[in-house]
Image (cartoon, rainbow, N blue to C red; front, side):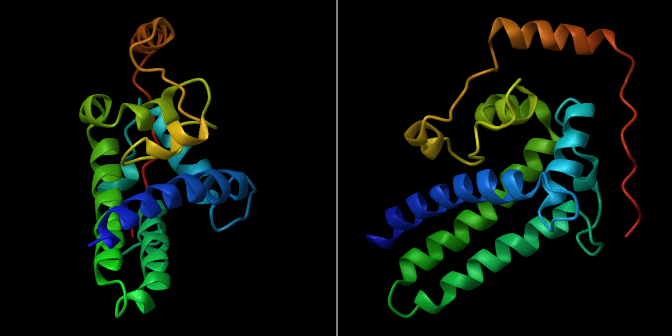
Amino acid sequence: MIGIPVGLIAANATEWVVHKYLLHNQGKKKGSFWGFHFHEHHKEVRKASFRDPYYERSLWGWNPQTKEVVALSGLLLTQLPLFPIAPFYVGTVAYCGWNYYRKHKRAHMDPEWAREHLPWHYDHHMGPNQDANWCVTRPWFDHIMGTREPYLGTEREARDRASRAKRPPPVTATPPAP
């Protein structure tokens, strides 16, 4: 049973490390496999006030969300050999991967839900510093690593929202058909 809290902690640490070092550090490099995150996902989310139209597409095409599922599946595959000796840990890690995708997708399809339930992730995308707030499901490792920077509910966020409300509706890229 110790595998459950260990799996929760390991999954949150992995969210932080992968987001910071792969999705951003490597992802900012043009041509990198991880570039989808910064050059497609972040770009669309900033233009569309936190919505990501790619989540409306099928997972059968090769798009940012398919790559996200492939990466999550790959991470789980690295843990499967531990199943015979740590089934609760592996089960928890599998749950965390599914929960990550579910919450991340819902957040970018329903920004108001994200503002209420995942404010740290909203802060990551919409705040002035997109190189902070690395966690998606729970902000634990952002607090531990000192990378949690609140934005939602601040005066700056109120000014930014008012400014965005005055602009014409964004023209977001129509994701290519699968």
